[in-house]
Length: 112
Length: 118
Image 1 (cartoon, each protein chain N blue to C red):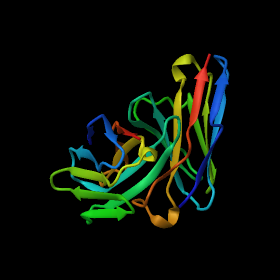
Image 2 (cartoon, helix red, strand yellow; image 1 turned 30 degrees about the horizontal axis):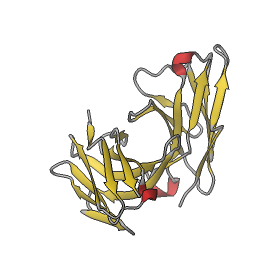
Image 3 (cartoon, rainbow over the protein chains, first blue to last red; image 1 turned 90 degrees about the horizontal axis):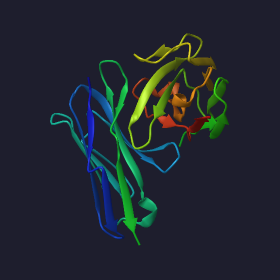
Image 4 (cartoon, rainbow over the protein chains, first blue to last red; image 1 turned 90 degrees about the vertical axis):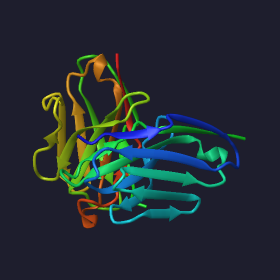
């Protein structure tokens, strides 16, 4: 069974600092990995999707890397802003049954 | 990006009543939609996979008769929590994938529905 772990569980940084969020998974048989943002009491917003054949994806200040063989992904957020405060979730899609497995998330607070 | 609309966003009901939650893909068609449940500060747990025109596939431990899923069209799936009890109180989120993107395309989520059973 796929297990997804996100470390740290919570992170607080001053505005302007770069953020590094980690995601690890136990089974490397995946189709893709997706990063989401969740605001309190809200649904999930897709940030980046990395296919298993890719090493990284970039969108604006966001960059996500994927090392499938070691079961790791990292989400970098450059020059953080208070509006980046949210919970960030990663999810991997298994190539065995197409199902997504989610991590518990990293809750980020960016202080003004 | 693709939009998934979920309604209602919040619902409070008495124990023993049934509640229906709708999930709509607004600008794409989805042959498959997914229903998740999320407890506070925990990960999303897949409850069932909703398939257009056929029966839903439920995850182990999820009661089919308690959580009725109907996927009558390519843009609408509904989750009905029957005879709700306080332990059913949770945050329910649906998601969908554009059928043109295939089984490994990007997944889009609704805004979630907060169910409180008194």
